[in-house]
Length: 115
Length: 113
Image (tube, rainbow over the protein chains, first blue to last red):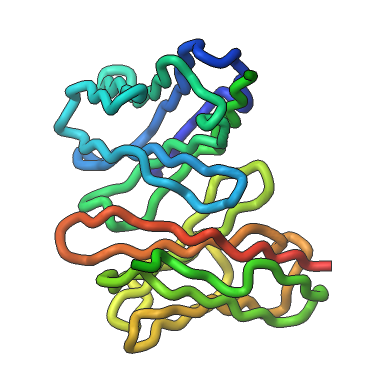
């Protein structure tokens, strides 16, 4: 069975600080996909990144970066120089095979950026 | 280009009643998935529809059923509502060929009283 654990329930940081959101996953599949989604107060889930199990290269997109380590089954997300607009709930998710199948989500981390 | 649209946005029902939620997928998408998100939790997969057939199902009772129409839109039906069915119901659409990112709607907030 697949499982995603986000141990940090809530995080608060002052604007411009860096913050890392942790994600640990469990799966028996050798091929799988990892995702991060952002959920603002409006409710919809906004896609941030998809990473397949064969690609352990770290990725950077502007102020966002992701660190994928298969050895520790972790897929952590770092926001550099945080901004108030980054305040939201962030979900890590796991999918098998092609990634169009069902997503297994963690319980989310509520991030609050204090101005 | 409209994204995923869901209706209604909010709904209040009485325990034991039945409810129907609706979803129109993003243009070009033919696969629709439904998720239930209880307060303070991550979304839980209910089922996925493709070509008007249920393709995958999560661990939800038969009270939860769905339908997909020829235009790819979808409905989620819940019978014999329980207080525990109160949640945000999210619809996601995607394509079925290769990988296409799943786009989520803003959800329907269902409250059962």
